[in-house]
View (cartoon, rainbow, N blue to C red):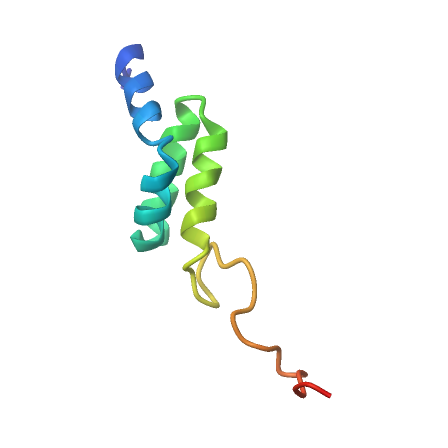
Length: 81
């Protein structure tokens, strides 16, 4: 499949909207964000792709593909001293 240059430019321009990424990416499933990121990377926009993944990862839970850190204290946490 060949995507016309103008279509690719319009797609990457549209999906470079940071407000849209912050709003939509956390609501997407991991497979959906991966598909979008792969398409953006194929259109030579790896930075935009990573931004969408990062926005999505902020809402991932423990065990999800893009989870970036603990949302609760580690089991060794004993509370404030």
